[in-house]
Length: 249
Image (cartoon, rainbow, N blue to C red; front, side, top):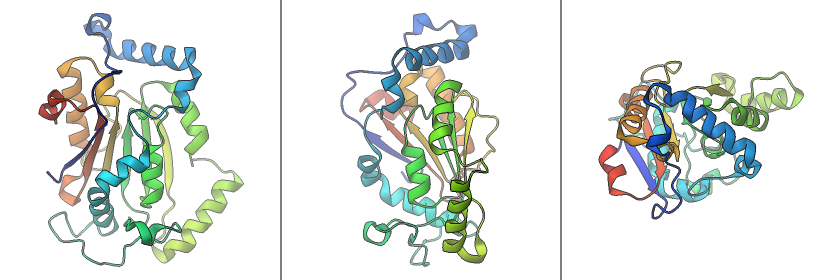
């Protein structure tokens, strides 16, 4: 339906799912953390890996859903049931925005990339549709250090100040500083993210990385909790093509 946009990435093949026998019930979080810390430490190429597909391929499949979320974020009081229509929110923040038909959120709305790993999808979506804020979450602090260096905006450096000036000029009087934060947390318990606070919740391969339906369901419940469905929010799930996954969604 309109609440969740799913992108399938082919047959299972090389699945990220964990071995249930290797995940002691009382220490699942420690298990996931130690596993991914070891993956990134032992194979640095994983720090540049995009699971499943790149951003451009994914956005081609989900553009109408993200446009709707961006339009609703740009006018949050309107509500999801109202037609966004032609409200002048067509993005003007990138050279090809008009050609691609991407809608600008006008510096409003929160995007959360759940279990981001080294993926740039959350960042590219935040930037492309001009959402206000992006939170990149992962259970491994090591990969988040890398992501913070690549995308984090919570600094006082000259580049960030210049980017802020550019955004302010583009958005005019309604400008609010746009931010990218990296937060360490378990996808099954994102208590630091407010209920119904997100315009877009991104899952790119994280569902595959959890062991068993209980863990997967816990993550999806958290995604549903933080997503602002009332105001057009969506969950974008990029995963393997599998009937079991559809049942979970």
